[in-house]
Length: 239
Image (cartoon, rainbow, N blue to C red; front, side, top):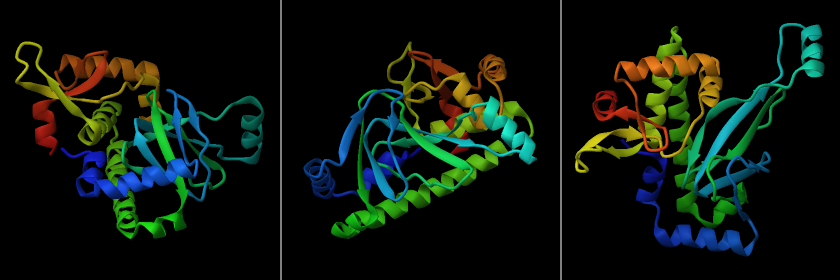
């Protein structure tokens, strides 16, 4: 199992990354955010997560007819759909295309983000290649995400979604009885049932019910402060 951050840091020269951090501080291009604080991102800029995790969400104001669209604009606030995480060491950007809107939020406290214009990467050609590799990796993961969300049954979409997330970001969860044994892999940060529901096209109530079923079947576990965990053998099979 390989997370984007480990994928990136494995090939990134330390001095290059340190120079980028120093440059961002000198040009006032870095900021630390609190949990759930919105990142004031705008199109045309490249953002890099130095520490913590970013939660990407999207909204869309679309409907079948003009009258329905007008009614929704007046009476309803568009619902946010959870689109995934961006972990430490990884890039992201905001794409603006009406009627779709993307936004980024700090998912954990002390999430640090730096930003630059794309042409600023001319100063670090090796890092530019690394950024493009990271975006290609993210694109491949999104194709897998779409495959999981194409499942007919909600419980299959739920399990596929959790499996992809934990494959990408999961950390070893040790056994309570034997600290040398890995019982599974857990998300390192919490994810609410409402956020999961928005990602898989379901509701919080349905996700809560289906999470209970998955726990009864031994397909998911909980770790620490109710962090979602998959048994080690499930991750091994998926890999």
